View 1: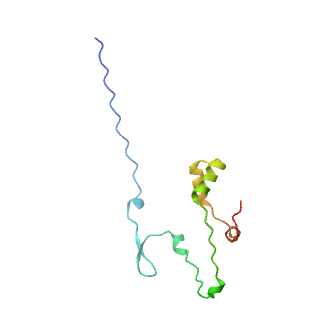
View 2: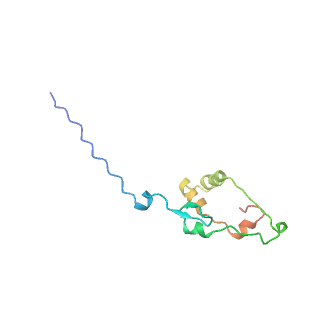
View 3: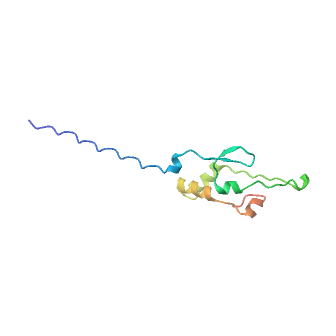
Length: 109
């Protein structure tokens, strides 16, 4: 009678790489100008402050908001420009409009 082959012994699982100490520690708390504690922000986020328009009369200030659906933008990048979803997401995320685009009355193609 032929002998049975034994099942091979499974290899031990590889250990996950260690995380750096910065990602494992909780966010440091910093005091904001108002004296409240906030989670640590990047240097760029701390430098950007909203414009103070209080010196201008209210009649001289106008606000224009233009909205476009993120799904529609993603659809154009993936279906019409034949980009991979990851590439399209990175392109959308890294895009910064110019000043002329921000002030244009309609979206440019």
